[in-house]
Amino acid sequence: MKINTLKFKTTITPNKLTNVTKKEMWQLYRQFYATTEIDFYQQLKIYDYFSFFRCAGEIIGFIGIQAQRPTLKERSYLLLRFGEAIILEKYRGKGLLQLAALKLGGLYWRDVLAGRVLFWGNAFTYKSYLVFAKTAEHFYPNHQQATPYKVKDIMDFLGGHYFSERYEQHHGIVKNIVHPLQDNSYRICYKYKEEPNIRFFSEINPRYELGDGLITIAPMNWRNIISLLKKVGKHNWGRITERRNADNRVFYSKFLIT
Figure 1: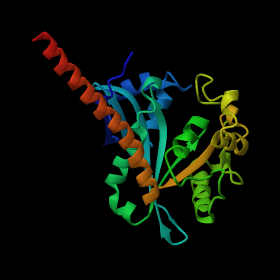
Figure 2: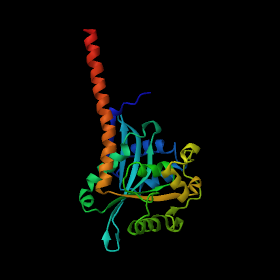
Figure 3: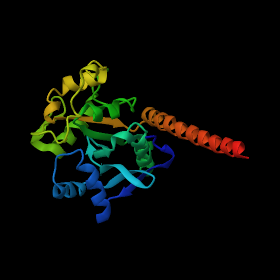
Figure 4: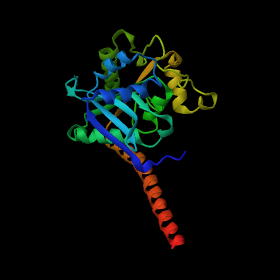
């Protein structure tokens, strides 16, 4: 089935969700994560915003966004956590997450200009890690360079604050007892294992199959903003081309009829 990318819509909304919206979110979430409906609704409370992804008006995915403003070593930061990310498989790779990041940066543009904004997440699958690796010019940890000390300090703050004794400081790993996913999509196929980013993820987080996560951070600097714009622009150009092709088909159909 061909997907009409012209009807995609990405929004950022405060956490003031209606019961109807929560039910829609649960129906998506339960397809991927092993949890109860009550626990899911409780988990929603920790987020300050949600980004919703829609196609033809229907919710096809969402992501929770948590904002925190700590001061570490006399420098203030705005740390934006991405969590509970869901996008139906056939709609992935359309630049939706990247557009959400840009829109979120627009909300906090003063902090972006001051160089205080960092995106982060607990990547417990290689796919989550690749969202950073394939989008950002600068992200940590990565296989090409050591993590700067100030970034490691932020990782350790996040690990201790959000995950307490489950955080393993040496590698920035978050320990889980069971894997939160319903299926085996977290497993790495043999043909992907030698891809540099995937290999690095599996080496630094060897218990990923048991659900351990890797705290991953990307600063909202100009290099990453440009990278986001390129990703979103690439997909938008595809939509524009699709629209032009559709218009041409309509024109030629009318021409042939008349």
